[in-house]
Image 1 (cartoon, rainbow, N blue to C red):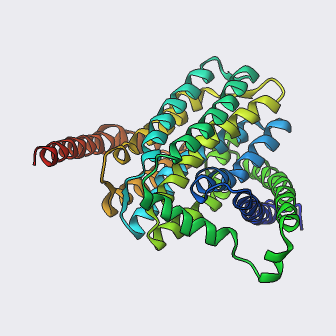
Image 2 (image 1 turned 45 degrees about the vertical axis):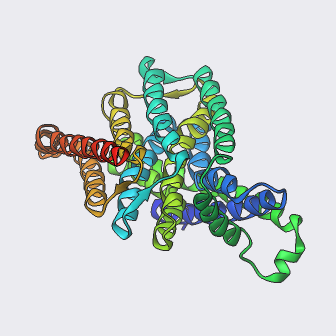
Length: 370
């Protein structure tokens, strides 16, 4: 039974999601009990905890020599987080983004994405690169904590209500048990993540071999979507509840964590670092950078990711995935899809974004003069 790749993948995904849930719940309770504010818990423990599956899969695949899965998982998860998760969340409820911290995160995400591309130009993200990225996540966390002290009261209240309730939702008997149970949740969650990542990577490699496609493509699509399920649940639930800062902050924060901590630690533990195929340099990494730039509208006060824009995000993710599948199977429609995206869809979208930015700037100027 456990030799079937489909069964292994499903079971691995279930263990990853369950492990992330236990880890986030236990770590959130411990942090709140230690006096850390819900805002900081939400921006660090929860955002990082939802990326724990990516960390487990990337480190596990890097150690076992499946570097393409490791890289594909990080790049694919970032593309998935912005295009699919934010797109779907915006369809549920337009995302009005006003959080100061997000306006710091997006430029950092764009800069870090470009940095990772530069690191990979020699065909490998080595251990020195990994050490720099890992140091970056420490700096990023410090910036988050400092920035949270200047956050607006309504955003602080939003996180306080959301994460204090989430962290302590349990039976009274469990709550009375105290830190010991919370610590066991953290340890148990980590154990499930390790086992789930092992099964998921094994299934991914077997699937790639069976379908005759590269491990990079499997990492960019199936594995990336599977490990991003905690982010999907967190952001969509936040959008339904109207907690729109949380919906956006979780997705963007997880992208940064993927690049800095997940890819950084993966490069440190992988023998010789993580290899970067030529295809990733010329296509997937540039797409990741373009997707990060597509999140720029959140930089503007009162910016809105509307339902039509959410639909565009989802459409781009569908087109990107279709291109990967068609290219992997040498389908004849690959060239036509690339031509349509390069000469019509992408320029039209860039023009629309530019018009939206100009209008936003003018609107702000008029409001200031009034």
